[in-house]
Image (cartoon, rainbow, N blue to C red; front, top):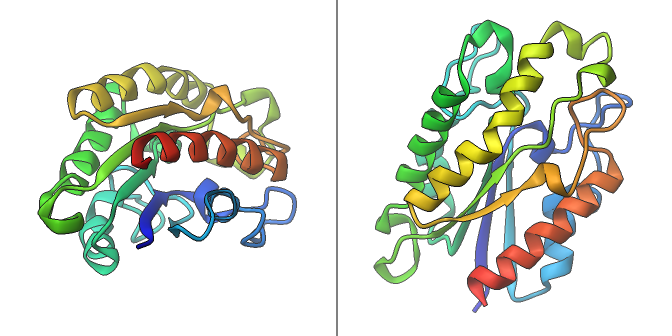
Length: 212
């Protein structure tokens, strides 16, 4: 029986192309590459949305609150063997006014909800892999991204791996620091094809370890 892996994230899971603002093909996006690497024994589901936060409403764009969208997503795709979550970059936008502590609390809400037994196989909760997002590179921000991110964003993002690791430890989740494997490309925020491939490699190893 196939094992279901749900990838829940923002534009770097959706596959935003920083060069033209479009969307990378499925075989370039990291969840798509992950599916190729894992093979036919796994069913990898992409649930990425541009601008998605952990648990906070966006004052400009609607439907970006990851916590509010989560239950429908989990119910739609259950039973889920492994829930992979990579969120937090959009939470660092200055207009949200969030601290790294608050962003980690947002992640905690996601983990608590996704870890309920009703969403996993045979009455067991899904396993969860927490992925802290890639860095925000201030020097690389293009004109468009500078409308949304600044130096404070980079500082907050740099604190997230340690804080996310603690959340993962507290709830018995797997943990992966994406910034150790991939970097943003030309706009200072989004992965390019090489970054997607590198992240997929790292996540694939974690998935195999967690699901055997």
